[in-house]
Image 1: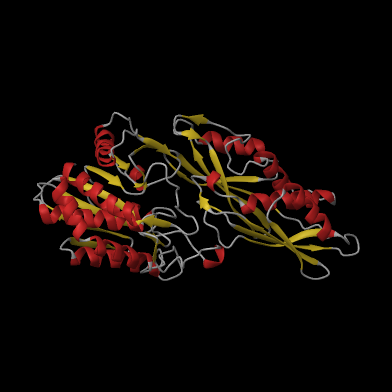
Image 2: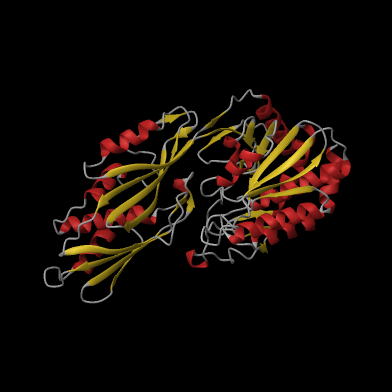
Length: 465
């Protein structure tokens, strides 16, 4: 069976690569301003239509569900195997330091570069061609359905729509995390803190920009513009530079005119599930601004409380609030920072150990903040926790380890996948053990070797499951 599938997949390698490049070229970032018929943005619908059309050309049954999601299916019978992936991506901008265009796939050094290459467009294409390999070589007495979401990076309304009207798989996997298999995914919680901002005429914030950083991305960029009294604060640029030098942060200071100064913080983007892989531009700048204001006896409670909460630990693993279990430590990503309707707001994305009651996090936030600061939970995604002895977990681990000639146990992650939205579902690849996670990062890529490996492993999983 392995030789038949593998040899077939090797003959369609170029098609797999070309299809991966073509779907990367569609900038399928969430946008709710494109019209009622494109609820998550025109380009997300274009990505969905591209893959549905590709599936139809490969001989599959397809369905577009209200431009919110869709599926591709083959086989017959009462039982349904689901494969659940997403085609939307987080924003990307060449100004962030990409060495290749994020929305023009580039094949270089046996890698395919572009936003979505590994999260989750490449793996979705791998799953589709794995279905093609099985369909063209075997007759199944069950059905296989590739379910396509286009709102995963935001609030999963795509999958909510699917579950309202469509058939649920009996068993399924999501190609959106790590090999060999994921048995636990932490709770994901987004919390915002807010305080009314009353400007001090001596020195006050006039503008904050983070280039619309997504809540699940470690921010690479943050800038703040301050207005100051030039007579009472004659040396503000020098004072700011001393503070920055003390911390050795990558923050530039620009005197715009006699009364305005701008500070620009540059960090390193990464997935919020792995804040240790990034360098948080917002956190650094808040620390500097808070100290700068304090230097002139100006206090803003929300900034001061923030510094007390996180200290200089941008990964959030040594917070004043701290929990840990077998799924790992609680982590925090300071993701958003803005002024709106007269309030200063800071948004956090937390990954909470599976055995921790997430309500405790909100309580801990409230006890850590001053009385005039509002704490609001914006969204909670319940955790996934399946026994390592679960039959699906064991089968997928066996399939991967046999192909990879390894003996690796299932993993727990801080990321969130569609697996937690379905019963009897876990995440399965595409990230190889010991490799750097490029999800949400600059110069995101998938190696061609990994892409073809995924097609072969997913084909065997489809056949055996």
